[in-house]
Each structure stands twice: as C-alpha cells, then as structure tokens.
Image 1 (cartoon, rainbow, N blue to C red):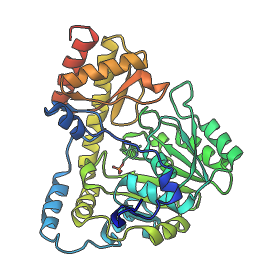
Image 2: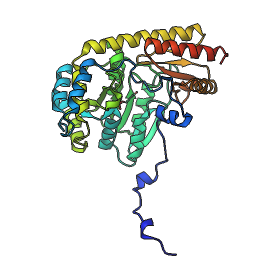
Image 3: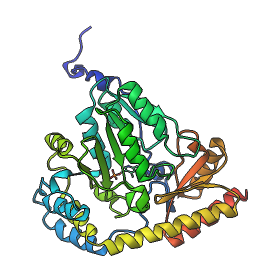
Length: 373
Ligand SMILES: *Cc1c(COP(=O)(O)O)cnc(C)c1O
C-alpha cells in the first residue's frame, strides 16, 4: 500500500505523544455557544466584577494608537514600577502573559521527563498542565480535613520523592482557604535544598497581612507569582509577574518569549499599579461581597468555607447535589463552577459580583435550594 506524501509527518515528541487530550477550562463562551443563549450572570471564573481603574483604561486607550510598534521586550517601565512598589531590585521581576504563562516557564526551567513535582489534588490546575506537558511526574496530595492544602504532606511527599518543584496557591483556588505567612516560611524551610516552592499569589491582594509572606528575594528556592487578572480586573489583558532570586529570573529570561506581553497590557498594568485607591476599593467591595454570600448561605442553612479570595465556596453537602445545583443555575443562565475533587467537590464556587449581580444570584440560588425551580 502506498501512502500519499501528505499523510506522512514526523512523530510527535515522546512527551507530547503520551499526553491525554484535555480541556482544562470550559469557558463561559463555550457554554453560550452550546446553549445558544447568552449567560445572565458570569460568576464562575473569579474575574473581577469591579472593572479596571479609570486611569488604566485611559493609558490603554492611548497605547492602542502605538500598537504598530512592538512593546518593550524588557517591560522596563512596569518592572521599575513594580520594583518600587515592592521595594526590591528590578532584576528580581519578570513580566509575562499571565500567571498561567509564567508557570509554564518555571516548569520548563526545572522539569524534564521524569522530574517529580508535587501539588494538591484539586487545586488550580494550570501547574499540572505544564508539568505533565514537560514530562514531569505529578504527585497530588489530598486536602487536609480543614479544606486547606496539607502543608505537612506536601513537604513529606517532596522529601520522599526528591521533588524539584512544589506548587502552592495561597490564597488557594478553588477552596479560597489560606495559610499564614509563618507556615509558608516553615514549608519552604522544610523542603529539600534542591526543591523550589512555586507560590501562586493570584489572590494575594485579598488576603490579610498575616497570610502574605514578606517579600524576600534572597532565597533561590522561592518563586512567587502575582497577577493583574484579579484585584486589578485585567484578566483579558494577560499580564502578570514573578518575583524571585536572580538565579531564577536569569533562567526565565533565557527562555521567555521576549515580545509576549503586549503594549496595551503593559501600559494598563503600570497605570493600575499607580491607582492603589482603586485597588483598595475593589478589595473592600470584595470583602463585603464575601460576607453577603456567607450570610445568604447561612440563611439557607448551608455552610461556607472561609475565603481569603474573591469567591466563596458554598457547601451543598455532596458532589452529586452540587452538580445538580450547578446544572440548575446554568439553566437560569448563571455561570458558576464547582471544584472537581473531593473533599471540595461538595461545594459550588461563586465569584463575588457587584451588589446587583449578587442580588440576582441570591434570588435564583434561593429559589433552587428551596426547590421551587
Ligand atoms: C486566576 C488564577 C490564575 C490565573 O492568573 P493569570 O494571571 O490570569 O494567568 C493563576 N492562579 C490562580 C490560583 C488563579 O486562581
């Protein structure tokens, strides 16, 4: 039998050929395409309901006119602004297109086929996606009984496996739970000397001071991730950064896509960083929204998990019941998500919306829980 030349292709790399097909995120847009109708409420992806800083909008509009030019590949102005904000040297910062992209660079820098990495079973999944994509061997540690990530077991596993990388989101997604800064420091100290801690602080702005370790750049085993997607409300602009020892930032600079971050995003992020009044107002509005969701659940006799982020997990009592509530919410055009793994899969995760959005959610949710719809 003869094969047409067009049917021949080189084999995929061993690592990629072994990957299972996966859809890590089903987007609200995909739901709208499937149902053929627009969603009424978009509270499933922890996007900010409070928009972006007016100053950031203005800066982004001005930058559009210069979009014919490549953006500064060094992201210099933004890094200088971030360095002043965090009181660190500019060399400790690398800007990238979202934490999701930066996680890929850190994984690529430390993981090759067979490298062990450790994360929590059911936590934010992008780290896993990259770790598997670079051929790493993933160990997933179950959550502790208090719905928090089990720092002790993460560390034990890292030591037992000789892991090179431990991933921890703090505050965590999807639980919303958070560990104290002193416990994060203790985790770092307990890891083997050749193991990195990838500390994802996507929700760091919403956490209390005791929950966010002091910014330090002297430990080459710690890499922290911050983003403009959540408190700054710029998820669609794709811009975030890492803070790390120069050993790490030098390595990332060797492999990053130099022109990855666009001009509009750079300008917007810098302006947003300069508008801390706006960010504080978002943080306050989110805290009020969290309290309102907790009060709503309480009224309906449902427990909640204490959250240090911009969403709340409402305990529905079981995964089947949570799935059912999720489907009913979707029939009302309400997009929320639920954690995929026990013990958190007994919950639905609801992003804090504006006051009118919360009222709309409360009405639909209450009707569903009380069995009238
Ligand atoms: C939303 C989220 C991210 C994604 O951040 P981007 O900067 O938008 O890529 C990363 N980590 C966690 C824990 C998140 O919840």
